[in-house]
Image (cartoon, rainbow, N blue to C red; front, side, top):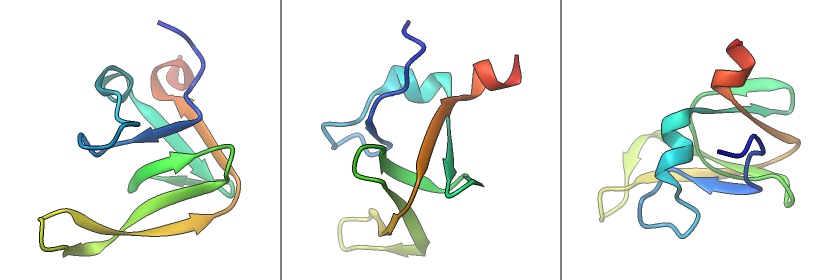
Length: 82
């Protein structure tokens, strides 16, 4: 498996940017220098993350999200711990 994180990744199985193998491996996100644990989707090249807006859901049962812009730094958790 490659040691480069993808430019864009989503935790939503309906998204075309969903990758189950990468999510099982463990991806960490630093957003503007702060560790974020509630990121639903990110894009490094465009500089944004989508985070859950509380526990509110839409009519389809998916969490409502907010898009935040800034510096996105994804990394693999297993290599960061080693």
